Image: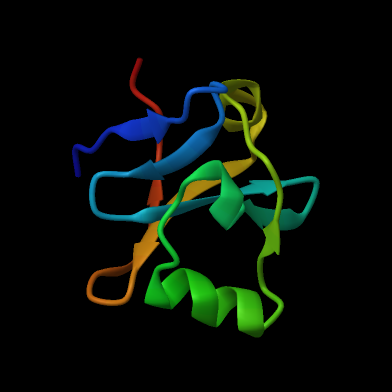
Length: 85
């Protein structure tokens, strides 16, 4: 899987080309809030409603220090990914 992570004008992590994004950090799972500019994806909303994700503004520092990074959408499911810089 090759994809790109988009940042907003404040250098906050938003999403990828066709996926929403979330990270695992300190045992919790975080996804960017809608006001950062991400789309309200179906899978993202499902995970939020199930209380499996919390919204939090994410930065590149958060990505680099995350225990794990995931991309998700309702068609392709959830995929664990690594950063390739």
